Picture: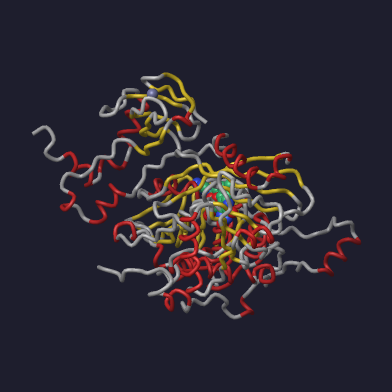
Length: 117
Length: 451
Ligand SMILES: Cc1cc2nc3c(=O)[nH]c(=O)nc-3n(C[C@H](O)[C@H](O)[C@H](O)COP(=O)(O)OP(=O)(O)OC[C@H]3O[C@@H](n4cnc5c(N)ncnc54)[C@H](O)[C@@H]3O)c2cc1C
Ligand SMILES: [Zn+2]
């Protein structure tokens, strides 16, 4: 059981929230250019760490807004809550982001291709 | 690479059920063949004379050797069964089974022990029924009473739609040669007198289906029976020794790093359930698996009132009465990933509310213990029994909330995969590349409730 500090509503029981799984999975722009294996990385493979995990939550039975959260899956300690569309700011959050195998996948590179142009 | 589109219980029926997988071997290959004392009514009487103080140890506590032909990571039921079948069916005996805790202390010792083979798809029918057939002779084969009890597993339907869907599933199951019967509420009331079939309930009992060959077994006894029989053939079971990494050279596994030092191995097989993702990460590849706590609880022992297993997907409850008299209740998995091995209190709370509505006599039960285990769930609710991107490294995982029933079959086909480096017909559909090939085995309907 978690006490989650919704950025808009304050601390609430986890029953009010919906878990949205791993955060920062980018949808490939040109999926047809990916191999089946590379697309499976995007679609099925999971970052399933025992430790800090970046994940999405929505306050379903409250303000219905989404946000990102860094939680230690071994202790349930909530380490950081930050807005959708942003990257984690704590050291632990940045380390978890960088250590994810997804950063090196063709699927993520495909998703980021053309960005900034 | 198209594979034929499937109709449950039709196209592949012959293929699924007549799969020529040698499950028995010659009977001389089975069971205890080393120097172990056999358990029997006579040995019980003999040991009674010495106040049961001279029973032989069931397995040794060997030192870890520097090298083995096969290292199995994880001494749960599946890992121990794998070792037993490697030794008894394939003659490979230079094996270590290494566990970070005590043997059977993972999900094997935490589950609600429901056994059934009434799955929808042919691929699942083949592996779960293969397992059921092995269960039916297991106590004799291992010379260990696994307390396998085919008391029947009755799954309830609580809406018109659920009943129709269930009836369709029953037809598919029967086409695979597996027993299943639809029951109406009156028949259910007759089978389970303590159930409330009042149609005004929030989740009324509209009907159900029963697999009479389904039932339960004693979870610890399954781990102990396989451990004793594997040990008897020379398998080293190493407890309290976590595997911390792999030796991998040019894409080939050469051994494992452990808390007790490095062990070289010709082949390494991982059967670590909830920790599959963590261990795959050590080997440098990923899995389509999420790990979450799943909970169960037992009551104080009471007189016999329930002689079948009852499951309900809609209220997410499964219940049976153990031979000791405890009411064993299983709840759902947490809604979010976790390794805390306890889970949220709201989950059993919701399940108990539904259980008390269906079984009003439960309202005065005192609960003795509750606990959690970390279950490894695949997106299609089917397991992974597979080679991996690393040569000679095999994984058996993803059984999620329902792998106890598969313990014998899973160990049997996994041993075959390890020995031959190729999956047999039963294991072949469960390879890891189904997630890139697209041939998922979607069992969310049959595995919908956690058991
Ligand atoms: C509450 C609950 C109820 C359930 N109910 C049912 C049911 O009714 N019917 C059913 O069919 N299934 C049920 N299941 C599922 C079933 O328990 C599992 O699918 C099955 O027991 C898995 O067996 P296993 O041998 O693969 O895993 P486990 O028994 O979990 O064994 C894995 C072993 O790997 C070890 N390990 C992990 N990491 C390492 C490492 N790094 N180094 C060394 N060792 C390691 C662990 O210590 C553990 O002993 C239930 C599960 C739970 C939690
Ligand atoms: Zn809110």
